[in-house]
Image (tube, rainbow, N blue to C red):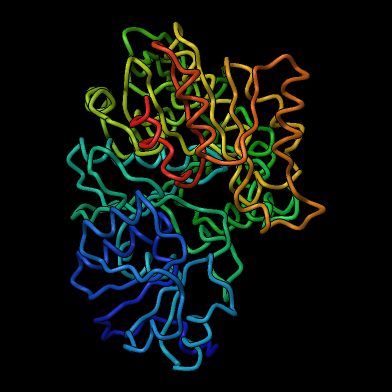
Length: 473
C-alpha cells in the first residue's frame, strides 16, 4: 500500500469502514454520520448489539468482505485492526490508491482534535471505567465527548459529540492495523490516564506477558509531562511499570499509602455502598448499582480523575446513583418465572472469576448457574487451561460450551473445553460440557428453577442464547 495515502484528506465526504461491527468501529461510524459524512461499512460477523445499533442509525452494513464494496471510490477508507493485508477490500484499496487510515487516526482527527483526552487503559475494566468517567463529566455539566467499547445505558450509545473540552477514550493495547502494528493507545497524548492493571491477554498478537508489558512501557514513556496517571495499586505488573514515571503517577486502590483508597463497603437493598478516602481524609460516601469489588475499584479510578477536573463529591454522589450501567456488563436481559438471565462480556480468567463473585454477592439466595463460551483468541488457547478450572468456584452449576471458532487456533495451542469440565468435576464442581448452544438451552430449561440466576459470559453474540433462553423458560 502507498504510505503517502495513509492520511486523511481535507475534502472528505464519503467514508467506508472495513470491519464496521467492532464496538469501537461502530461507535466511530455513527459519530462520523452525526458529523455529516456519508458512511458505509462491511463486516463478516454481523450480529447484535452492534448490527442493531448501526441499523438504528441508518448506516448500511454489507455482509462479507468483497472488492466490489469499494467500487464507489469513497474519499476515505478506515481499516479495522481485524483486517489482514490479504483481505479483498484491503487488496482493492491498494489497487485503487484510495486514502486510508486506522481507527485511532480517525478518532484523533475527527473527535479528539483540540480537546483534552482522558484515556482509560488496562487489561480489565476499561469500558466500565470509561463509562463511569463519562457520566461523571456529563453530570457535572462538562458536556464530554467519548468513544468507548460498550453501549452506555444512560446515552444508549457508545459515542457522543459534546461541546465540552474533554473527550474520554477507551485506550486499547491491541494492535492498530495491518499497516501499523503498534498498540492503539500510542496514538493519543492524554491530559489524564488510568491504568486498571496489566495481565497477559490477546494471545494472537502478544507472545507473553513481557510483550504486553513492553506495550504499556511505550505508552507510559510517551506520555506528556502534564499528564496525570492514576494506577491501580494492587497489581505487581502495574507497580513495575510506573517505576519509570513516578512523578506523574497517583495510585488508587486498597493500599494504606495510596493517594486514593477504597474504604468500607456493604451491599444493601441492591446498592453497593462504599467509602472513598483521598489521602488520609474521607472524600465521601457513595453508592452504585453495579456489583462487585472490581467495579468499586473502577469507580474509584473514575472518581480520582473527576476530582482532578474539579468535580465535587456531591455531584459525584448524585451521578453514581443515576448511572444505569453498560450493555453486556452485568446486564439483566430478563426475568422469567423468577429466573434471572444476566449477560456479561467476561472472557479472561480474572474477569470471569470477579464477575461470578460479584453476581454471587448481589444474588446470595438462589443458585448461580454460570454459562461460559471460550471465544477470544486467548480463551481458545491452552495458555489458561489450568487457570480456568479455578475461576468458577462461586458458581453452583457450570455450563461450558465447546468453542465454535477453535479452528482459528493452531492445533498444538488449542484449549480443551472438555478437559476444563473434567478438571472442574475432579474439583467436585457441578460442571457440564455442551457441543452446541441449543443443548445448553435445553439443559437450562430443564434445570433452572425459581430464584436461580443464569450468568452468561462471552465476548460474542453466543447464538442469541439470552433471548432464546428467556422464550423457553
